[in-house]
Amino acid sequence: MELRGKIWIDGKIFDFDDGKIHILAHALHYGTACFEGIHSYEAKKGVGIFRLKEHISRLYESAKVLGMQLRYSQGEIKKTIKKLIKINKIKDGYIRPLAFYGFGSLDVYPKNIKPSIAIIALPCSSEIKKPMRLMTSSYKRINPDASKFGAKISGFYANSVMAMREARQKGYDEALMLDSSGFVAEGPSHNVFMVKNGRIITSDSKSILPGITRLSLMELGRDLGYNVSEQKIYLDEIKTADEVFYCGTLSETIPIVQIDNAKIGNAKIGKITGILRKEFQKIVRGENKKYKKWLEYV
Ligand code: PMP
Image (cartoon, rainbow, N blue to C red; front, side):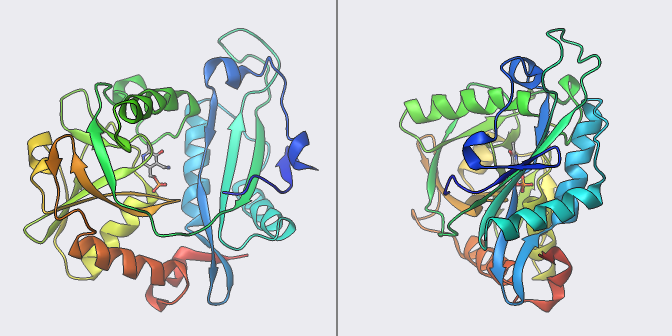
């Protein structure tokens, strides 16, 4: 990802190096921010943003969980994202809207702090992601009782950071996180799927972020005629799967070829993972009319 371009904060546009906040920003101390990661693509009819409506709607749901009354409507934020994509001359890009409690109080309760909202839009390369090796994390995914299901809140990512760090230190690419009951949940920033006997299965856990890519791949898989389900997945089951892959907005799909000491498949992308990846690519490039509603053009 190239770190450049203009940044929009609360209605004003700043040069990249001037996109700053105060050291006393509440979000910096207490994690009281929420965000989205959105992918834009150079598509058939121009620059298309993948499932923009769903991302913005999830941002506003997360903001609600933090008690934020955002000063712009969802429509205004969508318009601003499109404007910033044009200003920054982005084709394949990563867009990061961030709503946060800024400067105003050191109390844990963000009394009288008007939430801010920022938008960052960066060019990114859409290279095919290489297979990864996972380590089962000793850190459990945050229990849903500690939050609200589906909220993408910055503070919770400290849990992801710890899991990622542990996995990298042990020489793996990423972590696989379990929920507090010991079932497979997700990665620090990806959802997980496995393929067993031709069936596509994703984890059914209240500890995951129900990703937009996950939802899209489930629909795509069903449309392609596969049996797709959400199930409780035991660690032993995923380790003996025929294929495993991670998915998320930026990376789309990433084949997983090892979990701890267990090898998955033959160290290459699995057959069904490959089919989903190829079909997904057509969708995001605007080459499959059936899913044109998933792309909003700039
Ligand atoms: N889980 C976590 C914890 C994530 O951070 C992400 C990335 N947003 C995902 C799953 C995948 O979600 P999406 O497909 O909506 O990007």
